Amino acid sequence: MAKVYVYTREVRDVDYPAGLAQSVHFASDNPESGGKQPWNRDYGILFASGIITEKNTICPMGVKNPKVFKTDDECLKMGRWMNHPRESQFYGRLRT
View (tube, rainbow, N blue to C red):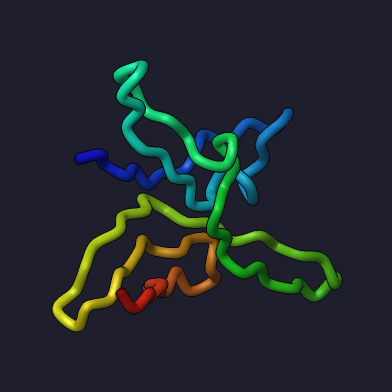
């Protein structure tokens, strides 16, 4: 059975800024290479909504330590959003 991996990437100011790197990325086992096969060319798939600042610019939000787990109510939940002014706990929910 193949595993699905959920992760963020390292921020690289030159070519992969925080708004992209701190999105949710997925990969799965690659039986041919024995390694992991990133999905979507290792580009983020799920993004946190940004905040519009007082200067009318977008402040991207990101995800910290994304994890996917199933709850008793048959929902999938994921990670904690970060870069929020109150660092609130917000979990994405997906009914299975």
